[in-house]
Structures are given as structure tokens and as C-alpha cells.
Amino acid sequence: MNDDDFHGDNWKKYDFVKVDEKDPTKLRPSQDDIINELQLLTLGDWFPLDFRINQDQWRQDKELMRSLDYWRPFQPKKGVMNDRESVLVYGLEGDTPTATTGLSHFESKYGYKPKESDFNVPTEARDKVKSLKTFFDWFEPFGRTFLITLNQGGFYARHRDHWWITRDTIRLIGFLGNSNPSNLQWEVDGHIMSYMPGHIYYVNTAKIHRLSSWVHGCDMVVCNIPKTWTNILKLFNVLKNTH
Ligand SMILES: [Fe+2]
Image 1: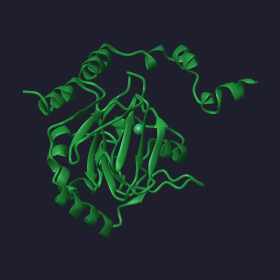
Image 2 (image 1 turned 180 degrees about the vertical axis):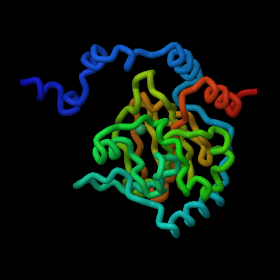
Image 3 (image 1 turned 30 degrees about the vertical axis):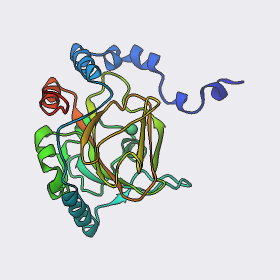
Image 4 (image 1 turned 90 degrees about the vertical axis):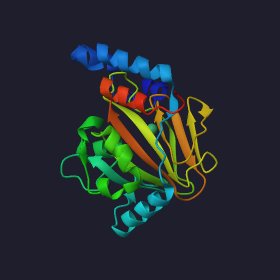
């Protein structure tokens, strides 16, 4: 067995030992990283926030964005059937709602990967999503954020996102439209998750996760917010199940 067979393709991408030797500050966490990540870990990998999203309003918002032709295939891959469409809500300067929303797709298109927190400029879609206004107002400024709809058979295969605790943002996900635990199955760290439709959750997407949609119209808002102490405090202010 040669090295390529043993490691598989992805191992060729980064050599973290070399990255660390070249710039020792890149992968080593700062004190703020440790404080913020530890506080998040204490809360768990998956917990709801106290926002209630008006689903009737969401359906109107979705329809409006359909009539404005904002929806685009999400990270299409040649030869792979995966029915997903997205609308960019916070992106880079000059981005429109139809701009590329996936980070790896962005990388393959432009040859580099910006930070999640660089995508902090609202697109025209931001103010059109009335159902999420209170939520957007609460955490603004956001990092890369998009709406996504998974139709029947749409999926994300098992993966991790930003598994270094030097990550610059954390992930919040809201369940909209037909998303409920029967229609849209989420697995995190080997567990099938339960969740309330119309709610926003913190999700530790550094852990292995995958999702599968069994019906059309499983919608989500997928958000990055900067991993700052202020945002952790804001998160605490809207935690569900606290008194
Ligand atoms: Fe993910």
C-alpha cells in the first residue's frame, strides 16, 4: 500500500505540521479562543435560542425571493444529484443574493478561502426576509449567512466545519418551512437530533454531522456569527430553557 492509498485524497490538501512550523500563531488558540469555546462547550453541541419564527411570514418571504429569482443551486457537483438551492444574505462587498454561498465552492472558483467573518455585508435579501428581522437585528453584524432549501433527496454528507478552536465564527441554524425532525434528519456526533420547527439553534458543526431531507421544502437559515465574548453574552440573553 503506498502513502496515497493509505491517506486518501484529502490528506494531500494540508499538512498542519508544516502550517504550524511556518506560522506558529495560525493554529494555536488565543486566550479568547479558549474562553469562548469553553463557555460554548458548557452549553452543549446543540441548543435552542428563544426566537419564534413566524412560518406564514417565512413562506411569503420565500415566495417573494422566488419571484425575484434569488434562488440558485447550492454547490452543484457534476454527476451528483443533490437538490439544494440557496440565497446569500450576508456576503462580501458587492455580493448579490445570487452570489456563491458555499465556502469550498468559493475556494474552487476564486482560488482562496476568505474568513467566514469577512462575509459581513448584507445583500438585498437581508431586508426582504421579514420573518428573520428580529433575529438578524439581534446578532448583526453576521458572517457568511444564507438561506437554503433542501428538496426530497437533498443532503449534506458527513463532514466537519472549522474544527480548529481558532475558528473566527460560530454556527447558528434556523429551521423553517417543512423542516421538522421527520422531514429533515440531522445527525451530530453520531446522534439523531430532535428540534423544534421555527426555532434557531446553536450547532457545534466542528463535530461530525450530516443531514438528509425526505420531502421538498426543508428550509433553513445557516448563519455564522463572529466568535466574540459579546456574541456569547448575546447568546446567553436569548437562551431557551433558562430562567
Ligand atoms: Fe456543515
